Image (cartoon, rainbow, N blue to C red; front, top):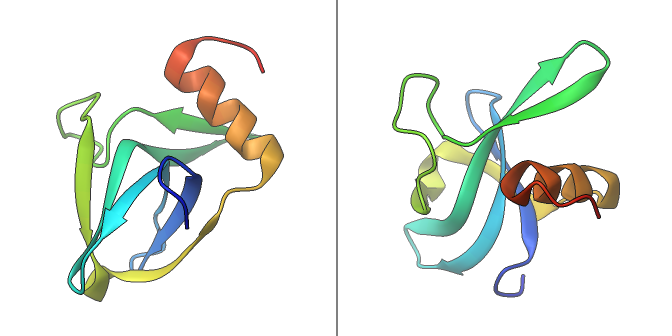
Length: 91
């Protein structure tokens, strides 16, 4: 993965997050501008947080590798919606 590449993280709980890959260590993935993915009918919504009751708009989060099933590049259509959610700019 490359720095600032938009990635999807799937947690062992089944929750999905989208954010910008920053770096990783043997223990964690560092992700910038993380958003939790929330289904909204036939669409996906993005909440600018990693916990439903957590502080919104956190700039970076460390996802512990023991709690992550996988990290993959985000599908182009989803990445465009994520960028729109982050910036308000339509790509």
